Structures are given as C-alpha cells and as structure tokens.
Image (tube, rainbow, N blue to C red):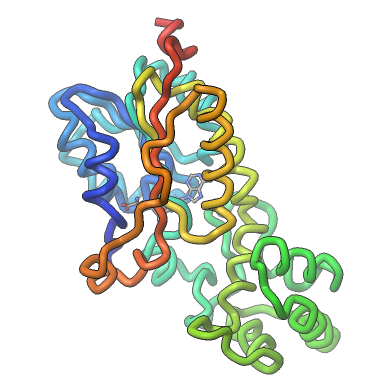
Length: 301
Ligand SMILES: C[S@@+](CC[C@H](N)C(=O)[O-])C[C@H]1O[C@@H](n2cnc3c(N)ncnc32)[C@H](O)[C@@H]1O
C-alpha cells in the first residue's frame, strides 16, 4: 500500500510555498508532501529532502525524479538539521515540514518489526547503522528500566505488569519476534479501549531505539536558526509526547517573539480524510512563522 500524505491540503495552505522558494522536508518518506511543495516552488525552488531511513530516500528519489536537481537528498537524522543546512549553503529557507513517525511502507513492508500485527524480527530502527535494536531493549534492559521506558515513552498504565511478564519469559528463551512480544503482552493485558494492548509498548520501544524525542529536540533548536524571516515550519505529530514537545517549544519562542504561533489549537483531519486514510485520525498539525529579522543563514550570504 502506498503512503498517503497526511493533512496535505492544510500543510500546503499554511506553508504557502511560492515559485523559487527553498524548503526543507525533514522527513521526506515517500515524498508526498515534498512533491506538492516542489510543484508550487517551480521552476527553481530547491528542496532539501532528509530521511534517516535509506529505503525512504530510495523511494523518495524515484517518486521525485521529475524534479531533477531541484531536490537534494540527505540520508541523515533531522537532529543534524543545522549542520546539514549549513553545509549545503542553499541560502534562504522559506519553509520546513516535519511529518513524524513511520510511513505506511515502513509499517507494512520493511520487515523491521514496526507493526504488532505482523510477525517480524524485533528491529524497529529507522537507520540500520544504529547499534541499538528493539530485540536488545526487550532482552537486555532490567525490569526497572522497562517499567520506566513503558511509562515514559508509552504512557502505558500496565507498565509494571508487562515488564514483569517480559522478564519472566526471557528467563527461558530470548524474545526474538514481534509476535513473541505481542503474545507476552496479550497474556497479561486486555485491550485498552480501542487500542491493541501492544500499541503503547511498541511505541515506547520505537521511541527508545531511535531516540526520537531527543532528535526532535535537537531539530527544534535548529529551526529558528535556519528559517528566514516570515519562513514557516509545519509539524505533524501522531502522539501526545511529540505534540507536547512542539506545543511547549512554540509557546516558549512565541513569548520571546522569536516565532509566532499560527494556530492556537492543532489542526486535525476532517472526517473525509480519516475515511480515506485512517492513519490521519491521530495527526495534529502545528504551524509557526519565524519573526527573526536576520537569521544566521541570511547573514552568511
Ligand atoms: C510519516 S513518514 C513521512 C511521510 C512523508 N511526509 C510523505 O508524504 O511521504 C516519516 C518519515 O520520517 C523518517 N524519520 C523518522 N525519524 C527521523 C529522523 N530523526 N530524521 C529523519 N527522518 C526521520 C522515517 O524514516 C519516515 O520515512
């Protein structure tokens, strides 16, 4: 199944890309948002297309080939945004988009254990050069570390029970697959309302393996440094931990007059979009505009 870009019309209307402007797509994925931006910034606007997963870069390269050398592909984490943009020296950056989480392709076809509905190895790394895998986390973390992890990154109410069950299981055999883990969880936890009982544990492990919140914090620190005045940044988050980071960061910078928040309440998908793309149900979009007179990038040129 192809990845459908979430809140696409809303992103384009708020980022308002214009001919010849330069943009960053910090999570290019399959290139859905990138393509819509590139159409609006023709004929000469550049797009820096970043993704931590080399397979996403390969797919985006193929999906965006009609734009030729207007797209600069970077296989790296958006945590290195400042360094990436400084090295490329593309001048003014008028807008940036972050669409956090996983693409449909990663969930369905990567074989890396992102989905609790499949039986795959416990990997969960976006970047396969990352030394820590999900299998390491579930087999090597102490019971206390697992409890902390499931509480902190999963907000999982049954963190203790699940951690205890994991530790009991692994006394006899290593936990190797997603279905090993799902089985352990399902034996001790009933459904969380509409959620599968494994949902929050999988989220927590993925965040830990990829240090997702740390990378977001590093990227947020870079955003005001790279956006030109009146440049806009759009953030699409899929769970409350991500959304809270964006909300607090933008409030703080709004108070200091470094950025202005364009939407007080996050924008969410309308019923029509949710029907076509159920993944959009949990998406929250926040937009800021940079108020800085002269950013470091503009000064350099
Ligand atoms: C939801 S998808 C993006 C989909 C994209 N907007 C589209 O329309 O096709 C999220 C992408 O972000 C990438 N990603 C996750 N964490 C990242 C990070 N720290 N740095 C760069 N890319 C990251 C994932 O590998 C994935 O390809």
